[in-house]
Image 1 (cartoon, rainbow, N blue to C red):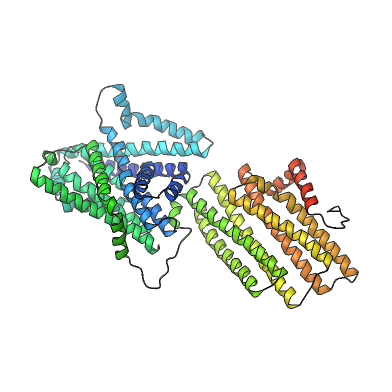
Image 2 (cartoon, rainbow, N blue to C red):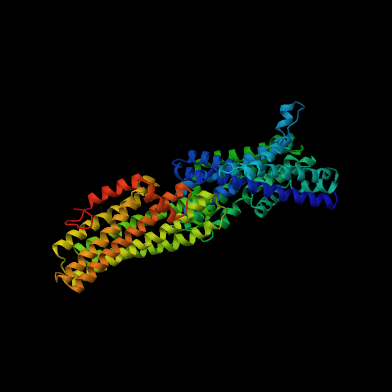
Amino acid sequence: MNIFNLFALFGGLAMFLFGMNIMGDGLERFGGGKLERVLEKLTSNPIKGVLLGAAVTGVIQSSSATTVMVVGFVNSGIMKLRQAIGIIMGANIGTTVTAWILSLSGIEGESFAVQFCKPENFTPILAVLGIIFIMFAKSDKKKNIGMILLGFTILMFGMNTMSDAVSDLGDEPWFGNLFTMFTNPVFGVLTGAMLTAIIQSSSASVGILQALSATGRITFGAAIPIIMGQNIGTCVTALISCVGANKNAKRAAMVHLYFNIIGTILFLILFYALNSAIHFAFVTEPIDEFKIAVVHTIFNVMTTAVLLPFSAWLEKLATITIPDKKHEEQQTVVLDERFLITPSYAIERSMTLTTDMAYIAQEAFETALKCVDDFSDKKLKLVKEDEDKTDRYEDMLDTYLVKVSGKDLSYKDSQKVSLLLHAIGDLEQITDYALKIATLGEEINSKKIVFSEKATEELAILRAAVTEILELTITAFASDDRRSAEKVEPLEDLIDELKAELKTRHINRLRDGKCTVELGFIFSDFINSLEKISDCCLNVAVSIIQLSDDNYDTHQYLSDEKESNEKYKERYNEYCKKYALPFSKSGIGN
């Protein structure tokens, strides 16, 4: 083996890792967060958890990614530690899929069907399809399929390059002696663990072992401890990811580590005990890609089958390792940064939190109106708490969404981030105006101010209209309901006209001496705050409609909507009748 073989070996490894990364990213983006939602919802029993963990890992080709997601779920309170254990075990089984795919290169036969099944023969076709999808397809889904195909091609090309680079090592005595050392189980396990910890992927380290097996100098006795060590090494990613997480998230990472260590110890004891008694003939025989995949699968399936019934013990062991401290509260991190590896799911979590923020804003507004009707310090305090809460939500979401926007997003996901960034600002402003209304209620109460009968009646109509527009907006946002969103603009236009009319009437009362200046300031601030809330609602509703239309020209949208939409005119007329002012001279009401 010369220096150029060494260059080829590392170049092949680089392509292998890059291809795996490209393929994994493509699979994640193609799934669009669906796999994470499945993990989140369908973990009611351990067996189901194992199956789900295996399926998700088999699809995304990374047990580390699955485990990191699970740590994030536990850290966010989405999943309990006991639910996570089954998924962690299943992830070890799912990661064997890569080894089986890579083993296809070792199949033998002269028929066209057998030859076509060899990756080196069918991957060029996948490469051509992949580059066509990436360069010419318009939809994100087709582009993601292209990434998957191209990533798989690069991965297999890297695998073949590594195999070709080390093919001459079979004749090197030192190489055979090196792998003779690995027949020492402890040394083999440590080597496998360190290699996997360095490259952060058990699938990749198994692939490297499969490439080296092409030399014919790696025996079963050398490969088995290395394979078991690779499972331990993959725990490093989860252990790193749990830094700064809460105790249950750290325990999930520890369960992953204990599961693999205990499984390795049990398997080693069983295997070498039987070998000392039976003397397996295959231990000294060369191992190939296919047999490595078989050993890898048997080890992971057996370990899961043996330890699954003892999942409660693993949970207890992790709890003993990371105990609870007295008077310490577990903090739930709703927007966990671990979800950033799957931007679509991170955006979905942000949408959930923004929806919670919207309901808080609605609650603040309703309580603020009660402060005006029947003031109490308790009600004012509740509005202030809601306003503080939405401030914190805005800061948290804004910081998180900026990080999400730095990821490689699809066009649709990028639009969703824009919608959320606009929405959180408007929702926070609604609570600001709600607090202003509540403080007006405090002033009305302290100064014993009473509105005239006409002013009270007029305010009741405007309040009802703003209450409805807020309900429509939150319904539209929470359920992505375009029909509700389309009802917002005509109502907001009517609210603008109602405000103008109420101001005109208020000025007339001032001129006639039926209203005081002090009361007039409060009246004006009240209707201004109500109208500003409706403006915020319109901003959110228009963003929802534009998201479904792939259109972000707000002014053009509003102009087109009024000029050409008969539905708009029909709804506007309905609202005019519903919120008619008494004795109107301006056409608003009767």
